[in-house]
Length: 331
Image: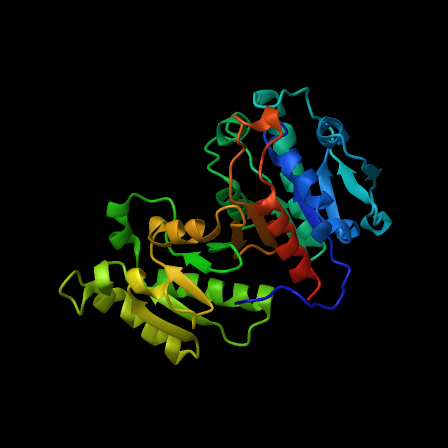
């Protein structure tokens, strides 16, 4: 199992954008930093938001927590929520997102992302409501695509992990019938290399051993159940091996997850591997975007507006996102 522990200390903070203030983002952030695993790291976490967003959560949860408003990360304190203020937050009601805060949400995200870039650091993002953001940004489809375009990234990879299983997703939100026509040698190689270098960046592996899945049942069974493995996936793996990568496959998805010899798995499509990951440990799963000029780690859940007013949300995904970011920045 890959480990994030035992790293030397370097002062690179993690910048946090909470997402929609009417969702569970503020709640899970506050619960996470109150956990003993994160209490010692508060000076390494910089929240980019409005004080009123986190003050409401502090009040409802009944916890004692100081807020330290700063303009310079050097002034971060070890016993406080260190906050860089963003103006423009309108009144909000938990569970009832409003278009009035769309500009504020985007401003928090962009400010935090710019700070992560400037400081060669990382960004942790909370959940947002896409329909709300579309009021401010036309055709907004999510954090990943928005940040890819904003920072001119050539290619990005959705990398999902819960600490036990590490997955790269070659194609993401596509109808299944379109996947075979989208898969190509170059796409597989590009996604593989992003996963490879991401594992090195986060976990400091020398040469990650990665399993590459086929697209058909039993990885095509030598062409008897489809030819994508022979015509596309295997040639891509051969080229990767020729370049020195420890690429393995194409392997069948119905058996690869019973093996522990691989550092990560590269799947061909969204639902090929994610059900396995989330069955193993749904609450600790995080979504990492590789290929941006900074590391972006996100919770793997939505705004959960239906439970936001109850303050009953599980915070483990936010905690894992923060721990991964902090450990990587200290390496």
